[in-house]
Each structure stands twice: as structure tokens, then as C-alpha cells.
Length: 266
Image 1 (cartoon, rainbow, N blue to C red):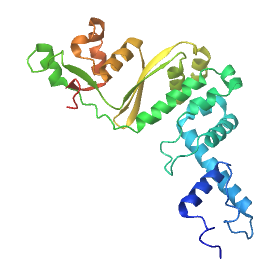
Image 2: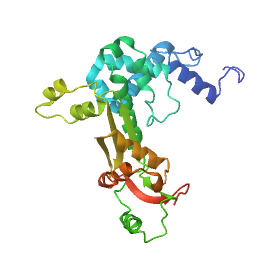
Image 3: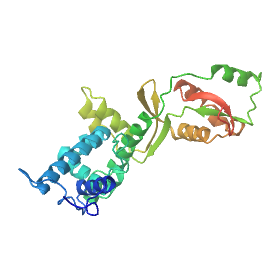
Image 4: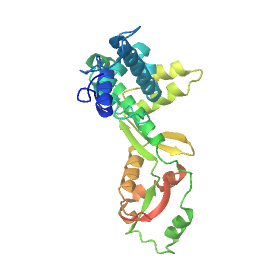
């Protein structure tokens, strides 16, 4: 029976086991029971299952990236990412950040498919948005009418258009928003659409967790700028005439859910 001085406590065991899963130095060989399988064989089994499990998690988030590079290449990238970005906790729900950096570190891959980094960014943003509180689609129509007719306490100098918190903006020098739509909504002329897509065309887009789905739309840079200004609580009176002309689009896309006082949570 090993003494208490040599027996690792639970925290030490957890730390060593996490190190072993990521192929880092550990002292588990003397702790794990050897019978039909050696300690190293048992650890290798756990490591393999661990890598496979997190690869499945990444494949669920980055489905379009996977489709563009194939399973073999994706599995290789996933393994590198998992070993370089250890799982910080038992919950895998939020695992997968910085996968775009893992792609960017592959010069040969980026050289042949330079849009992949931004495509990965898009898919990670979609995953993050999916975890935000769902927007039910409600609009501040009454406040909007009051503001239009100047019949309320809403002062354009002190109030701003509140964008639903489940909303995010996206910008890329590549047409990855269109690429994502083509790959994930296949139809009879999918191959033709992919062949004719100008991937080097810059795009901006919006995404939102809306009524239990991820709504995504390619929009103009001007609309993205307006959304960003509203998210930064820019007062209504400070918006330009051109931006105010885009207000119907904010309402049409259900992007505004309230009209609030600047620096207020109301």
C-alpha cells in the first residue's frame, strides 16, 4: 500500500490525467492498474477516444470547413487544435474557439484556400450566437410611432435603437457568407453556383438567434455600420440621414427590440 505522501490526491490525478490526454508529461503509469492491458495501452485508449470525441465536437461546429477540405484534412487539423488548445473544463459546449488560428497556421492550406480562415470565423460566430438568448421577434412599434410624431418623453439626444442582444455582425474580404449558404442549402444547381461564385468578393453580414433558429443574411456594409453604432449606444440624433433611411431595414429584419436611454439597461 503506497503511503499518503506518495499517493496523488484527486486534484493531482485530474491534472495528470488531463496532461496524459494531451500527450504531455505525466506520472500516471505507476497509478493505473496493469492486468490484461498495460497502463500505457489503457491511457492510449482514453487518448484516442478523447481526440475522437473533441474532433466530433469541432466537426459539428465547423461543418462547412469540413466539407471544403474533406474528412482526412479536417481530422488532422482537429487533432492539432485539440493538442494545442486543451479543453479547459469538462463541458464541451463552448469548445472550438480559435480554430481559425489553427487553420491560419497551415501555410500550404491557406495558400490553396485562403478563404478558410474567414469561413471558420463565420461558423464560430454562428455557434456563439446560437448560445445567446433567443430573440422572439418583438418590435418597439409603439415607441417608434411616438418618436416619429414626437409625442413622448423619448429624446433623440438621449435614446438609441437597441439591437437584440442575440445579434452579431460579420465582415470578410471573401464571399464566405454566400459560400456557407450554398454549401448548407443544397439544390439542383449547387455545383454551378459554387463554380460561378466569386470567392474574392468582400462581404458583410448579420446573424441572429431568432425564434430558435440562426438567421443569417448578407447585407450592405452601411447596414452593418448602423447596427454597430446602435450596439455602441449612439444616440438617434447622432445618426446620419443616410443611416436613418436604413431604419426600415432594421425593423424588417427584426434587429431592433427596444428604444432605450443611453447608458441605461431599461
